[in-house]
Amino acid sequence: MQPSTQEMYSKITGSIPARTDVNLAAEGFTDGQRNSAQNLRDAIAKDRVVLSLGTIWPAERHDRGHDRRADRIRAQQRIPAVEGQKRLVAAVAGAQ
Image 1 (cartoon, rainbow, N blue to C red):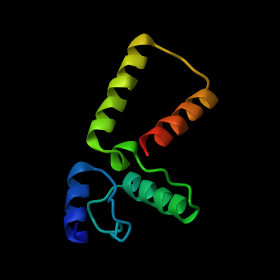
Image 2: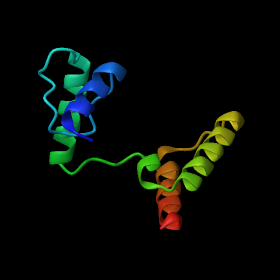
Image 3: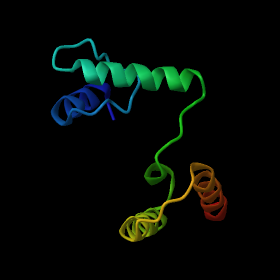
């Protein structure tokens, strides 16, 4: 996506640009967008970014993930964070 298109889209939606080279100092961006974009750039610089599973998984796996998450929410299953991390690692490994 061209920077000008990304800028227009982000101003309309209130999202931060997916591109990191878009000038958020331009009129029409909010302080929240500027702060969020800076946080993303900082995280990228520190190699601390994890892409959304929807970005890296094929659609059919993404949909199944949403279905499973919805089932867990309905069941109000609560698990410790460490267990959630283990399950996520296993799910990613199984998807490769």
